[in-house]
Length: 597
Image (cartoon, rainbow, N blue to C red):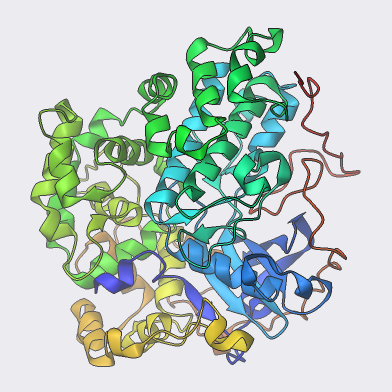
């Protein structure tokens, strides 16, 4: 059962053998791309069954980009499969979530969550390179949490830059300042690597590459410190509006940071950026060490404050989640993946606080240490101890040895369910109808009911061997290590002896309700998709006919062209803020001019 809720297990994958399953039947893709990058294009799209808005990242198997050889990949299609494999390993509120993968004969499509709040580069440009330092610190700690999660899971990004940090939504009331509540997401893992696996020393955007990466001397042992240099360049750009001088050396830091451009930056901020821009990788701090720096700690203390009412909900949440059967936990995990970002602000801050106290992973031993003599005190310490004491009840044996972000959301969703007295715990994520509908579509595999067969297709089927065969990171799963159909049947029968679960019963299951009318269940998601209120989502065979495939724009002639801040980056971004009409070209990130010594 635990396998179903591990990161990546609930990512649907289709390959070219699925004739009734392709991107164009599942999604209505926007005709114009949101962005283009070195090996792919990103389109907005609407899921035909659920109405959910997604970002589709498309990479071609054939054409002018097939000569791309970075990372030992044969073509952009394999590079996209590599990115999907990396994203399956990650589960964090500050990292973009992958939802589906379509491997077709000519292209590979990654379906990702859509971010509609713009990127950090945009915020730098509209502020003329003078964002308030408090805003910069608030953004930078989110970057550090994202990169820390990558490194904890053996992944290096290798292409960190302002364009690759997006916001989930806009907050017009405070613009042009960056959003205060919306989550920041790290995107674009095409050049990322698993540390120590098939390592290639070159790769990235030149302005953000570390000295050792530029000279091809980056090693497996120092790969994560290359990311830290890139973050130093990002912080430099946010603080003063331009890149570091190419002549900057450790010996010249004092002279460099005494220039007038740095007069408005606090000494702790200058100290941290100086550490990140050390020439030797071993002299740079890790992401965890950077988060402990006084400049970052000041920002954390001011911005990462879990709401007290949320902390008081941990006991009822654990009690409800611990009593839930395996099927309900699976349903909650699927719903948690679709939770509204607006509901997760307090929980995200709780996770970040616990990460700081648990060395980045919410493992059993780390939760115990977090409440020790040197750990956190008060309500947060009590929360860590409650999770430790109930660890065996909420994290099933045989799976991961730590509580994941998705499981934490699912856990606190139990506290958000109305009690018999109609009360709910404040600041907990709600189990919304639209999220349930999308989760039901996932677990039912589009058939109209959750069954052993639909779960079998979701987790046991080959994961898109496609043209790449055994070389594809999405190669077939070994069925001998997976649950057999009999176990899946027993799992589904926890929701009823019939062996199938319709949408109405799925709602009751997710909310922990007994059979009978669904309390407070609106039919918004059903009506929005053109369904009859009395019916569950229609099976794939009954869906409306899909339009002819949309022809994507032609690919650039050379994938090796170096990306510059002028180019529109590959991203899972939403529509730009400018009004319809002629698009404005991005200005280069050199507002104050390049500083040189």
